[in-house]
Length: 249
Image (cartoon, rainbow, N blue to C red; front, side, top):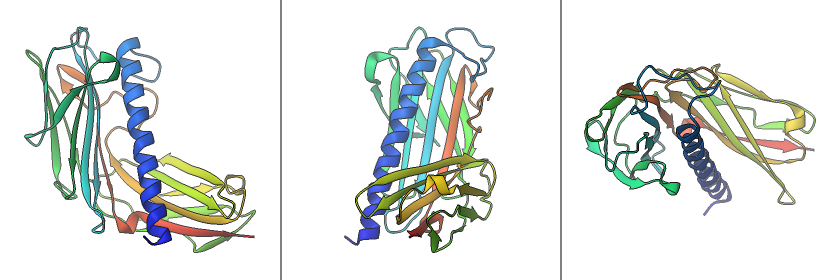
């Protein structure tokens, strides 16, 4: 495997693993502890479902895929539930710790192309919750081929239709195997990493994901309706979303 392709694959695996772990942990904590200053409680009573989900589409023809992960919980917790996206059923398992359920879908094709409206349905006995998001469109990312050590790095991109915000993820690999992770979540179409974020020479491999759904700031009410509350988002990226930068001495 080419060095850059290996770095891309390695980066994607770490980013996806970190997202899934943090999302599951955050959902479990919220479900167990209730609402906080960062989460706006809905009107429904204690039987309402909490739902936290992400639909990720990779449109890069070299490794295209569709992945969905949805965490669901309620108090009292239902014994069973069904989770569907556009009436396609997801595989449902009990979440670690028994606080709820995790529903997943993995496919090595692009099931829903950009612009598709995706309807999430969560159906435990006697309850129903839903949310709709559109898959964001493809967009082009621009970054310099090189930056000198001590300089800031600015990455910018075209707006993605249907996107509400963007997540930038990258890894700086140094010659002595040092690594620095770079990340940002922004509503704008650019981000600047300061010189302090780039502490040594090396190669940066990164990508920008367009996200449709509630921006993850304090007080967001979410977009899940019916007898539930929470957040359902859709992410899109492809080869045009990637960038590489060399940090020179």
